[in-house]
Length: 209
Image (tube, rainbow, N blue to C red; front, side, top):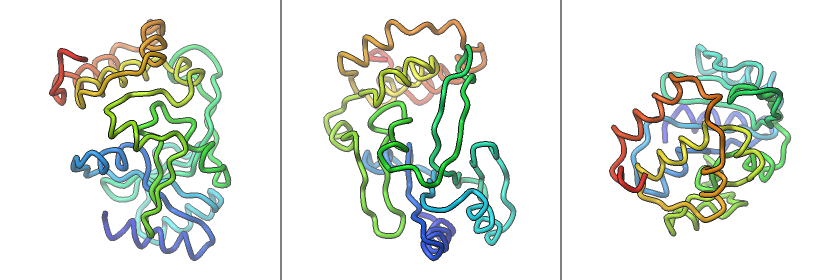
């Protein structure tokens, strides 16, 4: 973990909040896969306070200010937990709201798969795993967190098969059926290509994928 993330987490703690590693960074750590990109989710502070703290560490590039996602340096993404609500057609048709005071479970529930829905406290290492993602990593299983939200975002189907190709994991029955029945026609060609590129260039289990 980088020194800047530790210092950021200490400042967040001073303001009454907690900073967690999340998403692919935590997943890769449990799988002993090196990861240069660090995804940090900050709980217990407002978006205004988070931005003030981030400015103490230099230039802050805004990736998605409407839902509070900021890039700190080259490889650190910092965000508030957020909720997403479908509002139209297409994988981008979501209303996204940042909320630093969501529960840990609610924050994890927006994730696509259980293996990506794990939080790890930056400072003390505590693991928060409301959907048993660590167990699924050990068992090599890909399982959706929320069937409803998974089906609302067709891009998640391509991410799912990409993970099969990369990790050699298998889908549980419900996840397989959801993916099989999902309509992918709303995806732009460039996003399809991006996921296929990862599928073939990073995949070590192409046939399974």
